[in-house]
Image (cartoon, rainbow, N blue to C red):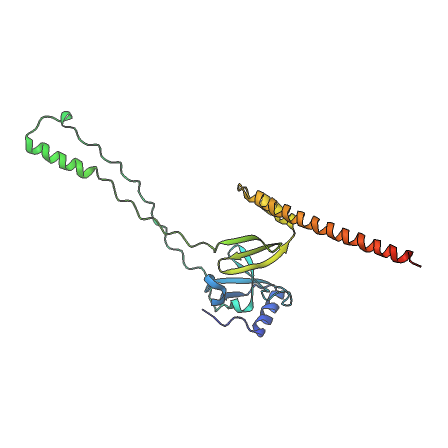
Length: 228
C-alpha cells in the first residue's frame, strides 16, 4: 500500500492523462481512513486554489474529492478483477422431518422389533443441520449529514466514515426550516419553530430600540436646526 501521496510531478502527469482522455488509477493511502488500500480512478482535477481536496476519484458508484495526500499512483495490475470462483451448487432443500411411526398402524410384532422401530423413528425426526450463511461483503462507509444550531447560527456539515466531506457552513434560518420539514419526527419541527420565534422576537426588540434611538437623534437634530 502506498503511503506517500501524490507529488507535484505526479499531479501534473495525471492532469495530462485526463486531457488525453485517460482516467489514471490511484490507490488510497492511510490518510484516506478506512478505505486505505482500495483502488479508484481519477476523473477530474479541480482548482487547487479553491480547496485542498481537488482530486476527484471514482470509487465504486461514487465520485468524491480527495487531497493529494489521500491517494498515490496505483501499481501495475492493481484493481484487476480476480478470476471468478466456480459457481457453488445450490443447497438442497431441507428434508421434511419424518413423521413418527404409530404402533397401531403396524402389524403386531414381537416386542424387540417394536422397540427397534421407535429408535429409527427418533433418529429420522432430527432436522438436518442448516447450511452456514455466507458472510455479507462489507459496504461503503456510512454518510452523516448534520444540521446544527449554536450561538444564533444554523450550520450544515457532511461526513462519510471518518472523513469530512463538507465542513460546517452557515445556512439561512428559512433553509434550516425547510430541511427540518423533511424529517417526519414529532417534536423536531416544533423545536425549530421555537428557536426561530425567539430569534424573531429578539430582532424585533432590537429594531424597536434602534427606532427609538433614531427618533431621539432626529428630535435633537431638529432642535439644533431651530436654534438661532
